[in-house]
Length: 326
Image (cartoon, rainbow, N blue to C red):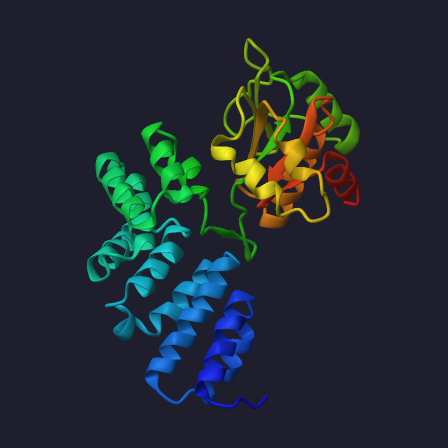
């Protein structure tokens, strides 16, 4: 393919990064004329790899331009993210700190720095870093949520969405990460026994013993929380007696162009079921399938009006129908 000039080529590289087409970027690397252009292209390759959760590949490419990148907030940030998702927290922390040092006004450096400090159990320092990032982003929801989660002493996995086993492989496949979403309810109640019945009838899923201990297969006293294992994968379903905070579900419901009533119906939710799957040995595809099955069972509750997941809100009937295709 021919380009009108080097700037047109660099724009194409940026577009490929947004499309996560790292192979296309790699193919045109020989056409780049200067070290600076090569450096920008490598940053784009790493960006695409990070979006595809291919963290080892992102790290490998970023290391190729360390001499140029060490004084860049973006380079330090992306390398810190790649290392953090491989659970190399000690390795990642200096890069995150350097991101805030070389570009103090780059908010995302403060974001990953805060998460890593929290992972090292330095909560007060983590909160200070998150607040600094929030000052630079004028109320960004990711920083607000991060500060709230750390203030509530959630686990590192819950705060970051990173399973503690991330970065491990088995039989050449990466293990899956955490899947989490909210089943929206128009009343504040749930029938956990019915959910477990539907899981068994529809998918043949039954809870098993937890690794090394006996799982508590009974819901809590009020029947609002269910924590169980499928094999050695932890599944948690919890009734949250309130709407999804900050009108987040309503906002993202607007992205579902296939469901014109999504926003209007989402506004009527009064509570939500928080569904989480935390795998240990599953690949991302296997973990994702299990998550879809659990959500589909939850959506059979008579008061379920939608599910907020994957950056949008889906209609119950549509989600269940697509899940059945598995």
